[in-house]
Amino acid sequence: MRALLLVACLAACGDNLKAKDDAGVSDAAPDAQALRHCLDRPTEIVRPPNGQLPCDLLPPGFGQ
Amino acid sequence: MHKKFLLVALISGTAAAHPHIEGGPAFANVSGQLVTFGVSHGCSGKDTVKIEVAIPTGVTGVRGLYGPFGAPKATKDANNNVTTVTWEKATYETDDNTYPEFTLRLKVPDVPFTQLMFSVTQTCRDATGDTVVVWDKPDDTTGNAAPRLTVVPARAKGWNKFMLPAGIAEADVPLYFGDAHIVWKGSAAYSPNAVVHAMIAMTPGVSVLSGDLAAGDEIWVKY
Image 1: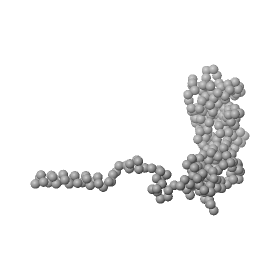
Image 2: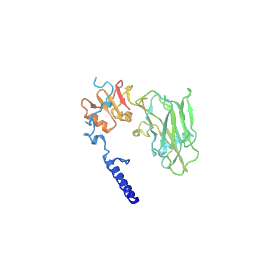
Image 3: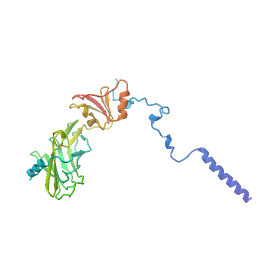
Image 4: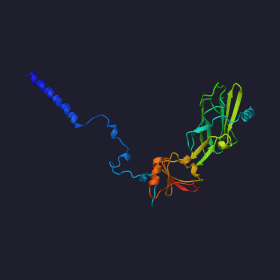
């Protein structure tokens, strides 16, 4: 009986470790290769840069 | 004694590095600003033992800070305005390896987009005697250039609208707007930042600011 409980316990521990890996959640920092400036990933952001001045660099009243 | 110093200066020539103003610019018509003068070198290998700074007309509220030579001494005119501030030490080093700094607290007049010249008299000493160099010329082509303090208008972070009280030569635009994000005159813009400058050139309906700015021009500046 004790041997059976021991086997069951080991099996449970193994399952838990495997489940943690599968979840893909980690406290580690994201891969540095994934960090790129907006200009280097124009297809991934809502408003891709077009090389022109953004509106916050136009003075008040500009174009009126 | 002073005449003796000047006489030695005439003999010794100009073999010294500029005393210069560190940091800046200063804000027009704002009290309590600190202006620091750095003395890179002595005179021909001699240690600097005395620095006298002449205060330009219109600069008020002047006080010298304690420095590496101790407490400064000030002279004043009949209106009680400080005209010179002098720091002096009694001893000298046997070589010229120090970098002394001297700081004034002052208020510059309401003269934005200009530069104020501070004439500086530097005295150096070694066992052979004193050497005095006067830094009072507008630029190096005419002699020993005086340190210049760049004056800009007081501003807030973000957008500021200015009417220029005096013209600004195109070559001086980076001098007065070196810490701006972007400067606009009409549909022409300038930025000291290379990336923003490229955006200016790429934006339809916008041109790169060129030419001199004139007195009375209205400009928008974002800091």
